[in-house]
Amino acid sequence: MQNSQISSDSLPQHIAIIMDGNGRWAKEQGKPRVFGHKNGVTAVRKTINAAVRLNIKAVTLFAFSSENWQRPEEEVGLLMELFISVLSTEVKKLHKNNLRLRVIGDKTRFSSRLQKKIQDAEQLTANNTGMVINIAANYGGKWDILQATKQLAQKAVDGELTVDEISEEMMTQHLTMSDIPEVDLLIRTSGECRISNFMLWQLAYAEMYFTPIYWPEFNEDSLADAVSWFVNRERRFGCTGEQVKALMNNQ
Ligand code: FPP
Image (cartoon, rainbow, N blue to C red; front, side):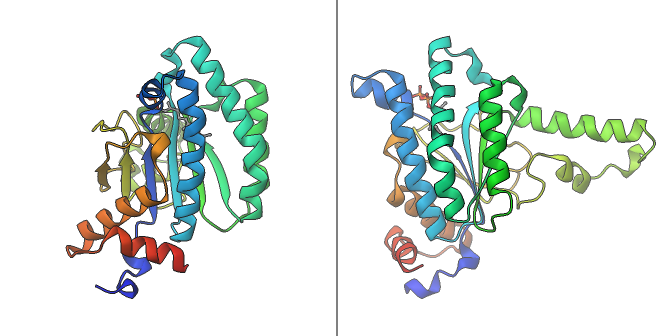
């Protein structure tokens, strides 16, 4: 197959990633867990660059689950500081590259300083027309479905709709990412093969790609391998990671 045969139609439009293995990677280096998270930011940068080059429409990254509050207080605090520092240093670059940043999840539990950083970043990039980057933070798939259900129940109570009128489309419209296509490709690193309460509704038809690579080691080539796996699942003939990498470099 020639490179030119991998058309943008065969590529995933929306890629979701469960970034896992920061702690185990750091432990292998004899370093504290936060060292893994810091190197995880480098992997995020590489992944976003590669996704932009492949003309992917949306990337959703699971940065902090509703369950992650149970981690030691020190690690949670350091993760929050890391989010603030990443937002401070990266957002202007994202904006310059016409990328849109959005944080999905229950933001009310974050400090007012972090909430303000998120709001500023979302506002600055709101009208950008390039790839959408969704950061899932204090996010849970069950929470998302529950908040959509509550909105619909309230509308029924207020007489704006009847129970019979509630449809799949209506549920989809009330979820946090109603404006972008459902996930085509889910990637989870570190060898774990679970969804872990990530986007439950939006993953209904996603292809699931599990790789043993720890998140801090994930890079442009790893994304190309995942995308070529996806293209082959869809089209059932042998595109290689090399061909996706060539496409990435030709954009
Ligand atoms: C999972 O590894 C990773 C996290 C819970 C945090 C992810 C955060 C980053 C990659 C850095 C910041 C990212 C953004 C988008 C600002 P783990 O700690 O569960 O690793 P383990 O399973 O080996 O313990």
